[in-house]
Image (cartoon, rainbow, N blue to C red; front, side):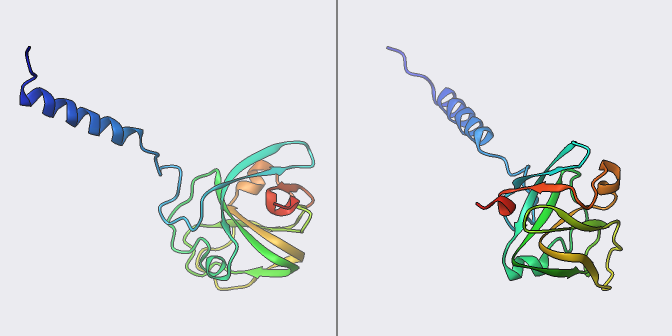
Length: 163
């Protein structure tokens, strides 16, 4: 009977370890400084178009206060959904936010109340909604105009339909 030499065993073990590492789940889909796992969200326009995004959820005070601050970029299909328990007029600002954003204010039923387009990075000026909102969606600046997203369109996410 012949036994494999030490080099063969070492090579086999090394290959097994490397392959196991390749099979591990990747975090490439998750932003490095994400505050929560990404969730699916859709915006359905009144014209019938559906736009899909992967969003982080900001559903507590600390997450809502930090938001997208200090991020130099955001993928085109990403965003952040701020969830509030009450429905009222909201106001956001762009303090410490590097990228221009479209800020979408959303009513409890998922209807878009108003959109602040191409907000100014680092501005501390208040950006109010045009009516009561329970959710606020932040997307890359200019995207809502490019995709034809308007007030009255519908945001589909479990937060607006009940989890």
